[in-house]
Length: 529
Image 1 (tube, rainbow, N blue to C red):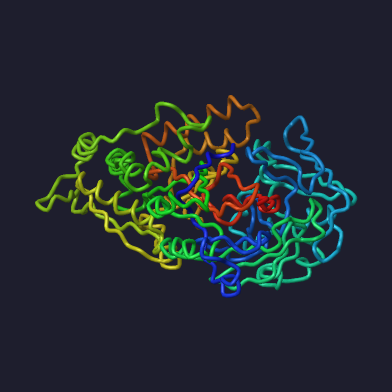
Image 2 (image 1 turned 90 degrees about the vertical axis):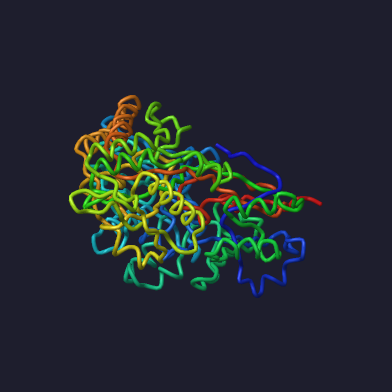
């Protein structure tokens, strides 16, 4: 579903280009002097450019293709496969026939063996792919000749086809190297519309059009992703003309509202911000505290004041306008009821206004990533609301290197969200067997009813049964939340108005790399003057 397009204002996380060479290609109006160059800014960069280690797993990697990809409406369509898969009656076998004549950028042919190699390597425990659990339904993958691949599942997994958008790596290159540290991780070879020309970590990732791309050579010949973590710096570089596009938080996006040379795109998303409430902590481990915090937060005020209405209140990973959302699970702001829940649970208010129970003070730290203004603002607002209920939340900023060792005991202002299927969020977020497994189930949440419902939702092929399962999950989270979901955030992008073709999809949490108006940059055309 294409998000609304708004002229003028704002942005999202795009761009700064340490564009030493590229700055010379820009003019003061912000448009590059040539229409076949695009420079966009991103707030984060991948740790690796290897799909075997997780790069591009949700599609749109630019260097690679998957068997399938998404169209503008987020519907699956063929990419390296010539058609959508044939699925067996029991839902356990998926057969793909491959597109003929496709070559990797080094000139070697793409075959079914590359598909088999890619999936088998990702599933190998020796491969450092943090997303391996996403494929745990896969039992085997087998190449049958050069142009046919058969996937066999351990159990019927309803959204499996969505998992086949992940990029395919060449066995003849990646298979001859150490999968975790070989040259392929920084100098990849793929079948995609662009070729990597350089990666200066912490600065920029540069691409040029693949003249032999099976889908046709892109009109945008040079494409650069500039890595700029700081929101204010991205806005400054966009205004200075060093960038052709940028994603910005709403307060900075407003500064471009009257700019006639740029166009603003507002992408609807599944991207949420939430607070993890570790169940092993003496305060957040109390269900009464979690229930109280869940209704003590004023979500609508966050949408109004922090997001400038570019988003909506969140009550779980599923947005309220999704067909998977369960009406009646909204949690209205109710400070008095929150105080009552805490009183009844024995959390009594001390002289300083902070509650305590059995000698335990109702206080805990909340970490957010430094430099991320949206997370900082959400953390401060959450802490302010919690204090009104008598709970002290001490906000702390740090890098992920600082935060990760503390995730099992400390609360974190986290984020996530995938529009592909409700299983993609809920399985990893809520399943008890994944508790404390890196970024999976960061709250170490355990609820047998939720475990059963999530399992039912991912294995059933009946849409009605799946909806009933996810209804159960959402109702359980009302009674026993492991997280306080705050907002779903629209992504705002400002793009120089010189191309035909930019548009938006419904976006996941991860944006800037594969998402954004440049999700289809390979199909952009310069506007005629």
